[in-house]
Amino acid sequence: MNDFIYRLTTSIAREFKDYVHRFEDLKKNMMFNSPKKHNRNISKSDWRTITILMNYKAKATFLNLKNSMKRCSC
Image (cartoon, rainbow, N blue to C red; front, side, top):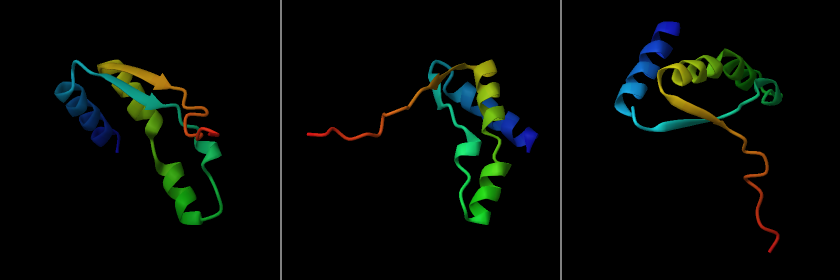
């Protein structure tokens, strides 16, 4: 899996080398809920490794999306 992530981030960094890559700062422990299958898929994901490698290979920033999905009260 690490080899796949390394190759994936390398190809993205090469193809979009002048871009700034933005990532949402995800917290895995807040995503767990009752379905077992969902919890297993979330626990297997390795988002942190992807963001660390993209930050190393290209320009990357983390976004704070708090309250970004709220609708206007009007």
